Length: 256
Image (cartoon, rainbow, N blue to C red; front, side, top):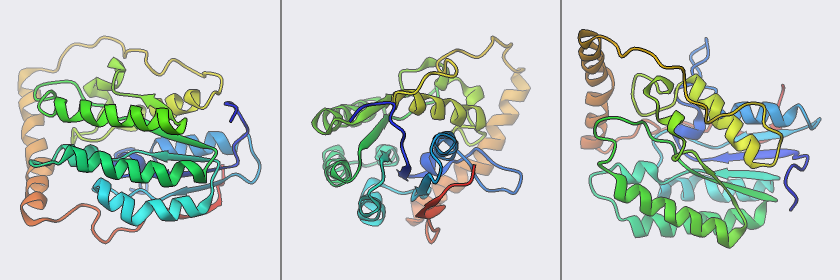
């Protein structure tokens, strides 16, 4: 397939990153990079259709079970598959099983579309960032291998220092904020062969670090509002996505 084609449809598969957390809109819903990408593709192709099957909190096994067959049946021009990172953050994680499930997903999705897009997910820089480094690197090796096998595009967000800047991340320290999602949309846009509209890897302007008391207040707020609830869900086996439907379950025309 030639890059920079006029794509007429997009299906996004994955977890909270692809759902759009935490690029919040005024009504409390989330937008995110996939919606932004769909809007840009739709501006070039009248009748463009878009589905987003992603649901927050999903592990790769759930993505394969709940989303992949549905996405493959839609026969979209472009399919984005991002998953597995939630698995690597669990206390126990069978990386080879995760890679096998990613392989199953790619094997089903690649023949169903014109262009499969995979990603090396971004990571926030800072204390504790290297705790899961070995797992993440193995996950990325698997992604590279699948891309080579299927002719998929790999968008390397992880290597972009700018996307590690804490200022591009939400208060929960797990999800990108609006500017981060906007940069991811630009990265995928360019990976699909379109002319760059900006340098998505450009660093943010330097800024003075916040005062010590502001950092500590932020740490306390993070622990109270995000970390403790996250630990509670892990201990009880619950997920933030339990019972939640996909944001756009059908491949329908996308209004720009």
